[in-house]
Amino acid sequence: MDEDDLTLDPGFAQRFEARGRPDCQLYLISPLDVGGDFPDRLRAALEGGPVAAFQFRVKGADQHEAAKLAEPLQRICAKHEVAFIVNDDMGLAKRLGADGVHLGQGDGDPREARALLGPNAQIGVTCHDSRHLAMEAGEAGADYVAFGAFFPTITKDTQHRPEPSILGWWSTLFEIPCVAIGGITPDNGRVLVEAGADFLAVCGAVWNHPQGPGAAVAAFRDVLKR
Image (cartoon, rainbow, N blue to C red; front, side):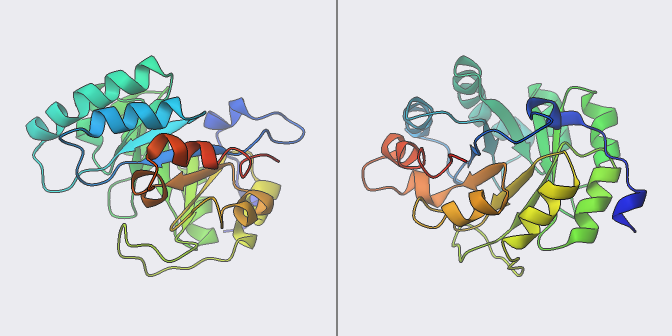
């Protein structure tokens, strides 16, 4: 596939200016355990500074259990005007009336998600280190593409390690935003912002911060500036 042959749905790109992109934004990914006091921790994170989206990522729970866990988190996100994105599961996203779904390479086609969730849903696709997969996702109507893991991470097993230059390649050629993911912290995230990331997806750096998630989010403020 040739980049010149690809026309992308603008989708999520409507929040970006035609000339020059705004500051990078945070995209929080939940830990696998979102029970107990996690709603309070999420609230603290969202009060720590601007966050664009929160991805609800749980494993091994049926839809009923997952929906119960998601309900208070979805309310908190709505109060703070943060997009609530469901990881992997289109059916759960539909059941919750979520703002969108994030699809791994084995989780279905963006076209299927669009048909199920409607025209306003935010649909993201994991593209690892592949330009080809990213172009295919854009052609299929994805609202954003995610590249990574850029740094070592214990959040999930990773087999791909793209160079930051893939973010610059994407942001130069295409309008829909790109998300950088994988082991990102306030100490290493700046290089990804400078390379062209529109969002930094973070998990452990926020939820495992010794001073709490609010302090962690606040620590990213200067990192995100263009």
